[in-house]
Length: 177
Image (cartoon, rainbow, N blue to C red; front, side, top):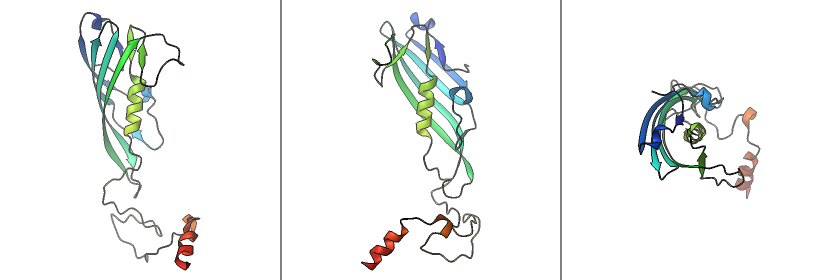
């Protein structure tokens, strides 16, 4: 089992296919975010296929777990992330201006998919995570968690003064007209 996403391609010269299992810590990939904590190493099943003389087709199934705060009740909860990566690498020394967005190049000896894995995982992080679809969130007046208990606050249509929306006056203008 590997602990990196860097692959030596010497063996692939004599074979058409290689499969690897990797358990990679998130820190070396730059997966350090304020809002998200990667709580488990990345479990990766990586397959390398020789495609022609110098091209390598890569597929990878990546799984991990993250800890995020619910967007309604701010209670931390764990989310399973799972994604697939498919890329074609070519040997090349193209200058950065000549490389197109979907092209990947390697030096002919080693192949590093770390940055590609980091990018696909970042895209999988939920933008507005919810601990459940039925999460009641927090009371906007007293702050009690409504999933656990109820409060005696009277429901209002207006936001509390500390978080009032500067556009709330527009709805009042519509009522008048």
